[in-house]
Length: 258
Image (tube, rainbow, N blue to C red; front, side, top):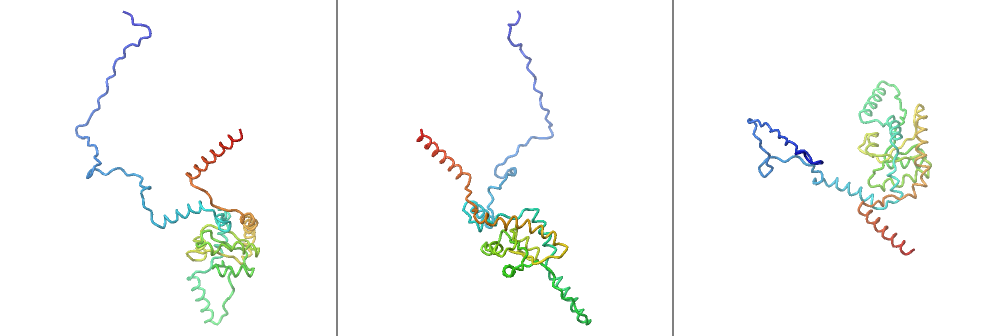
């Protein structure tokens, strides 16, 4: 009898290939119960109790985002761009003050010269000035040519008035990242502010270009920065709530109009 049209022909059942088990190796599944095998490693990042210092840093960072920051403090979040900062630090490194070993060597040479009856050279070197009181004095005396301020001075009240003073005395100033980075230039752990009073003739061309760029970024934008508030950025949940509230209010306003 011929098969009906459209009917599927019976397919021969495929034989499953049997797995060849080696009798020498017995299958022993791991038991992760008490006293059993160690479980695979998990990402425990969320369960770590971080040190108090880290927790305070993170809370402080979030608070700074949430609270409204007044312009004099907010200006310290706008730092010098990377390329300009590297060229500035290259110049500053040329004028590092002497460390203890260099000072000892200089004094020994001077003592030897005096013992031999020669007149020692007493030429004052051109170096970077540091120390808040000293730099403030140089700014007030109009001797400073460039003032470099760290962005992370704590408490910020120590340097919050410096940009205004620099602008009043018409001295170029800039805010850079890292008081520790400034500290390395003057052989200290940290330095809140540095200052250059003069440079050598061979560096004057490069120094003038840096000053022009710094003036354009900081001194000339002073009126703009003193009106700009910072912070006020809420979390994702708060933003979603306010969006939903605004949506409802907009809908109600549209219904009243119709």
